Length: 97
Length: 232
Image 1: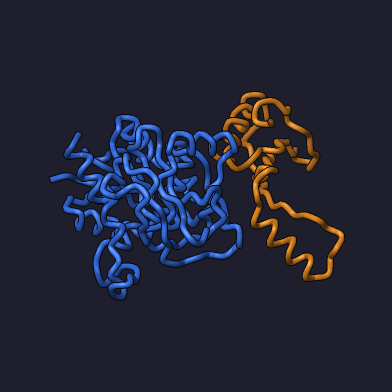
Image 2: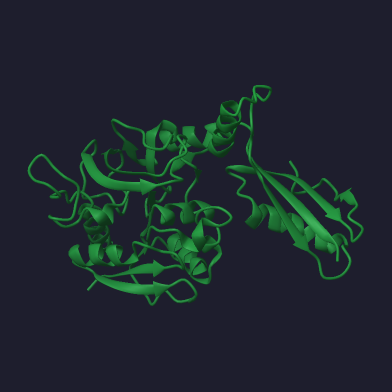
């Protein structure tokens, strides 16, 4: 069954306390090559049946209305993973700013 | 008697305390359930604190899509007083009844303390019993209480006087402009991170210079709602 992947990140201009905590841990472990860490979310929606435009349109809506909060987060990617595991970008319109 | 609904969601913690605060204020608390479509004709609504749905997805996000929230949104649009405390405040922002959002505390830790705040707006349904500039002390307990909004929204909030409470002394969670609570344009919907329902009875509130645990600064929020309903 195909899967639609939705990636959500905290808005770039806002503080990401979780990422800051991870960056702090990296520094304590002696990793000094990384200047910043930001932590986001990946949603995998398994689709019953083929992925058509209607499904993608509803995913874009879900991504904006439920999976992300536009005040604090951005939807940064919506892509389709087919049964073979191949990624394909799913039309960047709508949900993607 | 004035009836104030307190909605219980899966993971609500302070619903009983909120009901008790309503009773102390002289109103009749009505227990409401998140899965219902019915506000049972209550005169005002309180969304209590807690960790609805385990804070999954985002704090308050799943609860903000529950069946009863449709009724809450409709009631808020009719002018019914709605108060969101802590997790309830998060739900109100997720439901777009209040502007901005709440993110993890900037220091990364859960914080629990008796918090001093300044009352900035006394024209709301929930704060008309305070004086402008009054300093009140109310317990605060949260992990994700950092109030944020776009620069444009912040400017509007400040310009229109929609900031209701501001942290004094310590900013406990990195909230922008030290914002502890906000209201909508109409002044009937108020959300705040600190817990007024935990400061309504001497013996169980924050410490004051007068006596241990004697602080009751939260009670005026609930009596304010009654007053605004009686005046309406």
